[in-house]
Length: 191
Image (cartoon, rainbow, N blue to C red):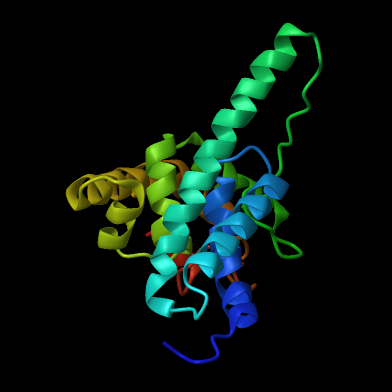
């Protein structure tokens, strides 16, 4: 462990992936940001000296906090529905698009949202979280084979949905392709 762990830098580097992951589990982006903050506070309290080796524990903490919050929100919605109080639902995209990427982002976001929740969770952890299958299995409490299978089925489903839109997503071949996926090129992501 380092004597002076750089918490700010670590937060800036890891928070976007954690927010994306939490966004798959909770109703809104602001809820996801709250979940990530709570996870960082838990991590800081448990490991005040900081240790990069414990970063996968952040994903487990985000998952636990997000699921707890979702259960709490569902109970609240049920209570409010019984009392005729309207509850607005936020329908924001899972990740923040760059300028000019809104259309592509909405297509990819819809394709992700159409996946079963367990497959979406694995894809998010693997592609945007950068976790290994072993770390994902530990985070969600399933076997590595189950995690790998969910990942494979999710990629097949995404390919099935996105492949027919390949030309639309890639646009004019003379213009640089916009890449919102964690691949070196958009073509690689759709191949």
